[in-house]
Amino acid sequence: MKRKVVNLALSFIGPIALIVILSMPIGPLTGGLGIIQPVGGIFDNGSPEPGDQTIILTGLDAEVEVIIDHLGIPHIYAESITDAMMALGYMHAKDRLFQVVMQNAFAAGRVSEIVGGYAASSDMFYRAIGLARSAQETLEWFEENADSDPVIRDALDGVNAEVAGANAFIRTLNSANMPIEFKVLGYTPELWTAKDVFINAKMLAWGLAGSIIDFQRQWMRTTLDNDTLYNDLFPDVLPNTIPIIQEQYNLSIAEYPLGPGKVPAASASDQYSGVDLASEAIIPDDQLEDVMKMIN
Image (cartoon, rainbow, N blue to C red):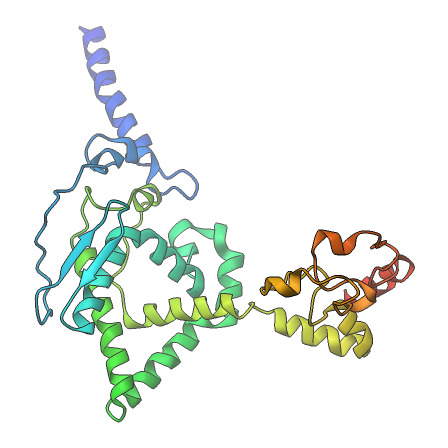
């Protein structure tokens, strides 16, 4: 009898322990091993969608048609820009929600809220840069000037329509259409806001502007206090530049102007024949160490 009681107790303890273990977070994977459960885990994803779907979005002025081609690329046909933007927001959330959420969190310095302290250094950097603060200021400027400028009003209406479309999809999230990445991280995405759109725009501008390279070069130019040396380090035309115009690319060394240090500015292989690039280096080897000390 005692053995039966022990066996019965163990039969309960095993499943309970398994449930607890599957629910425990593993490092940044706060979803734990629960993602492999048959219901609510990753196996809910991957079900084929019906070929034709009718989706009702509140706020559309007319019917919008979205045709997805054989490459999975959506083509949006709408009667107005705001309707097209709403459909675009919906498709963005449907096809790349994890990407846009993480990109926004990265720019706003909020990645640690999703993955834990592993991203603390990145978050501190981008909070110091202030892309989110700048996005809020830009949004407020649009809102303040929308009534006096129809172009600004149209732009803001487009942003709000895209946000509404994205949120329309986010509100439908369930175990079947929740991105697997969010299941692994145990994170449920927040609703989108107009500020989020501007944060992503700021991040894009930040990347295209070269981040802090301009500040670094300004510091180096001030520190070096030598325009000739600075221009040698950062020439307007790099020695390995390949001109877009092929006629320039095919010029001979004699016809093409030399770059800094007498190195040919064009990089056609025949133009380098007979040129000792080591002897024509912009910064001689015996001076390079001193220059690096100055920069550092």
